[in-house]
Length: 203
Image (cartoon, rainbow, N blue to C red; front, side, top):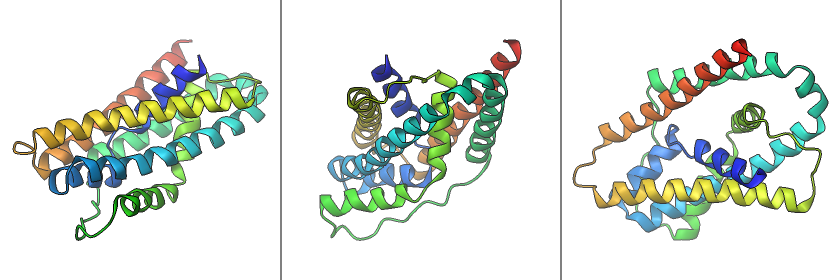
């Protein structure tokens, strides 16, 4: 079960609503799918690391989460609504592409470093876990590995499909379309937050 919850988490985290995500999609248009996918995997690696850290944290405070489950879900839903609204109504500052002299390893570590300094991802991941009910007293190596593999599989699959489609339809894809895709991803987060807060009140 934790493996599939990890996949869902990876899929949500790989929605291309951030500037680094748009950067990777633009990279697919200009530098090819291999370099774009390598860059995206740098982001997915950070998602796996932060996913495990967040999991270990919420496991330690499981009793408090269960005790205040409804208020926490409402609070996290409000946070997701704010994040989704900011991405949907705002205009992301896209990192501009540099020259094509970087190796694949440099592409990987570039987005890895850009993503790892986005500490707010920890809050988003913890929120997803709480909403999905990812609570377990088990922090065994097997559980952590399953979660990490799930997040990695969900994220890498999502980015593979995204970059594949963008690259193979690049004649029809413009920067304006990428920005619209980013806004659409923000809208998904916004709707997710609204739906969750409705169900929290209903419960």
